[in-house]
Length: 127
Image (cartoon, rainbow, N blue to C red; front, side):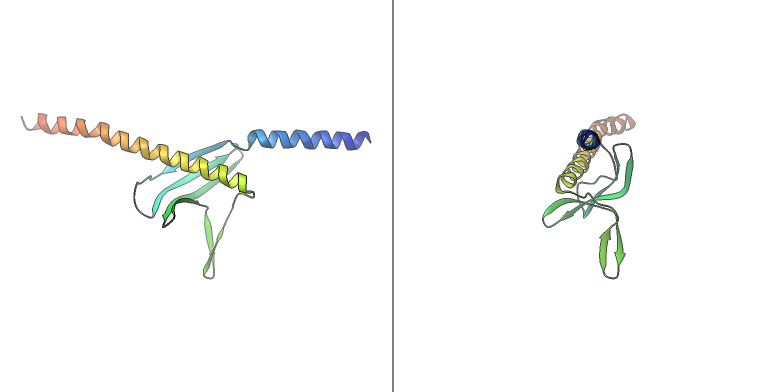
């Protein structure tokens, strides 16, 4: 009886740890674009323990979506790795999309701040 209680306590502790760590995604975005079919490529580290490279942010007729790395079998593509539950997929997708939006906003604000500097340089060079 004590053994069963100990196992149940250990299982509860593992589940609590898993819940606490489920949302720890470190996402790095590369080549963010505001147009085109492939908008960006991402690398995702999950809980500092598992890394996924080659995640893509793509646009389809239904909007933006996150695509996992894939390989081709015949005429069909299969994901190399993937979230196992609906909740973990939603968390993963949300983390990637948030990082993509941040990268895009940063790129746009950087372009806006560079534009006045470029105009000033042209004006000074024309003197």
